[in-house]
Length: 281
View 1 (cartoon, helix red, strand yellow):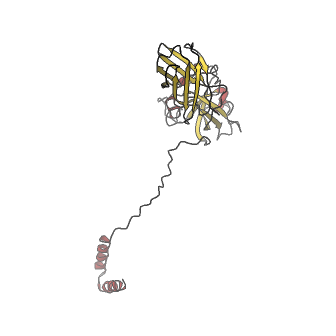
View 2: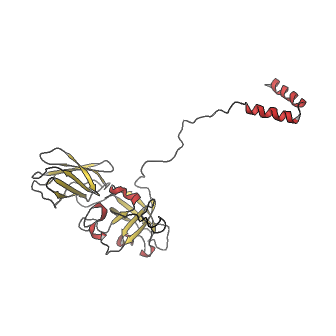
View 3: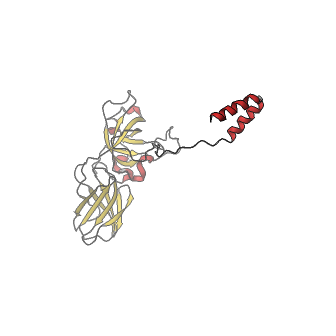
């Protein structure tokens, strides 16, 4: 290496500046490429796992008036009269990005007002159950009146619930939300409807995760039969189960299952509601 450097210095002294520049360019052109070292570690910190139940996330919230018909009809989850179903005013309609085509019906969230000291009621929060859908309005952009348009995370609350965390003049209010376990009084309720061999079951008053992902039904003369989601938390099956006591198996999004045996007696009828076991909360 020292001899090579000595030769280069000697040649450098005899070369004209133009020739020296050409030699250096040729050496750089034919020099070997630098070695690329590939790391065995993955530095992509983007997580696809769902947020933990204790993690607060940003959203916005508005309210609707007490005389709004949504108080009675129960909305897109199919719970019917929310007062009779036990949900009262502690309910929420979710924007499209949160509603997940009704999969989230029955889940519970805690909300608190943030960022605006003029309207927020300090130290307060509310717990609501998802009972409805806030449909997007594509006549407006997400920042100009389309509160429930993607990608907005938005909660629509009864004014009674809204006023527990903020003054009503706040309007479209910044909030934080987090998923929590549902606490319910009594057992899971099964409201049976349909006709002949078409059987529909509305699953309501579900504690724990709250959102039901699978339901099975069993008569005294059958094995366990999987039911399909009709809409919201209405599940259905085509099966002849008349004159048989009915049992139900309910699974929520956290993977837990509760089995309620002989919930409905042998002489059950369409339009009746029965109460089974409950998830821990």
